[in-house]
Amino acid sequence: MEEQNNTQDILNQVHESTPDTLHPILDYIIKNGKMIAAGVAAIIIIAAGVSGFKYMNQQKLIKAQSEMGTILIKYNGAKQAEALSAFEKDAPASMKPAVQLALTKAWMDAGRYADAKDAWAAIAKTSPKMAPVAGLGQAKCLMLEDKAGEAVTVLQKLKESAGASYAASINRLLGEAAEKAGNFQVAVQAYQALLTSSPQEASFFEFKIKELKAKI
Image (cartoon, rainbow, N blue to C red):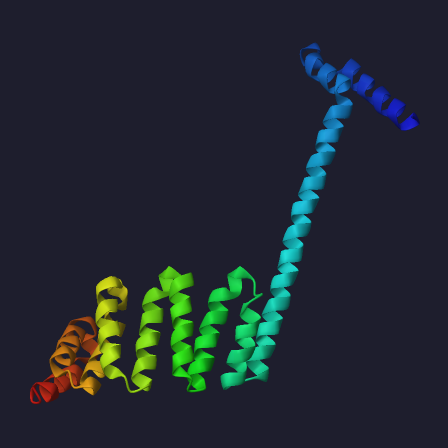
């Protein structure tokens, strides 16, 4: 009660020393002091709650990053992939792309190319912007499974949908896959496209084009 009287005394003193033009504002504050105080208190509580929520999320992220780091250091190959698969289920959304990429590498390192293809497909589904990279990964897995013909099909479709920034990477892998599949005409076309996009390697591509044309 004493605190309330002190507060009111202070407001009254401010009122007396304030120019007349500001009295209506001060009157409103004095009359509605409790309501305003309650509003300020509510804002402070909400701000504290948001801050606490952000802090908790930050701590969860730090913990998850530490856990993933432990997996990458402690395991390799299939064991690492299995641990990452289990970890991914509850991983923070912001970490999903990194976990998925680590998972594809782990499966490929283990020689589990079918599992790696599934992991690449998951990346393409959850991160559309990563679809071209995922397509290249899937094609590489097919080549490692000695399915060069299927890799060619994947890469030709990818070439139609991916942006120009991926053209060189696609043509490079397409040339390799097509040559391995015995589709020399497609391989030649891929290497011819690389003459323009990668002129620093022109001598190598010219050699490959000449070599492959002799087989057509």
